[in-house]
Length: 346
Image (cartoon, rainbow, N blue to C red; front, side, top):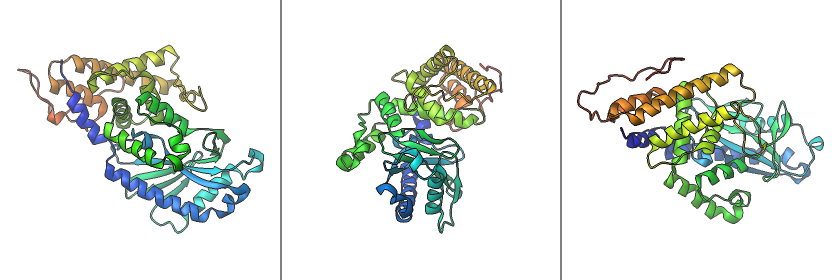
């Protein structure tokens, strides 16, 4: 059996966002926060509002990857802390307009886009963007300002807590909700998760890299994260852990009619609910071919041959150039095989 564990570790170091890139994102994020703090007086003073921020999603959970085209991102939640009922607040569009004005004034090096769920600040030259979802109420029970659907109950901090429990990282919600009290402990936790880099985080990154390589009809990162965390199979080797996790994901999807249920608010929401059947089937077909190649790779006696089976699905960044051709008479490949649109390749 070919052991590709070290190849996966090398691949992980390639797709994982570097500390240098993380520092750039944080610097730009902090600059945007300063703009919002200095220009939000009109809305902040309604009902004695406070303005707070909380980075969320893959950046905090350290499952963020560097896509093949380098268009990576950070989600930074903008929280208006107040007690106004929905009918007494400014409209969701007014909140969006205020954020656009705050971050866009005198802006000449980024593109500001008002999306339904956030305000996006794109830095085309640097090839990254910052998404600014806007929330109202309080951090334990926030509502997302959606320009089409009004106010939607949404709690990204709960999602972080759910995932970190799966990762057994020792995260506690109060580290964020009461960060002034736990600021040093929160920073220590953030540092520790990157030092430890537990296997579940790597599995999520591998699934995101798979989706990133195929693009098109593949699910977004949050779906890959939920599927991985709900079906994670631990193993000393990343290649075996990924294979077994993929198999469990297929069982999970086929047993519940291809639903991916959100584990936190809004609990039970099916993230595949707006997918047409053709898009669902595309994903299931790609999953089947990935599992078939993964099983063949794990059982193959030659590491280089096995590596190309992984590379078909994870893309050219998977490091077959350093794989060992350790079996006499094994084929030598100049380039990886190409997976067909529907065929299940050996």
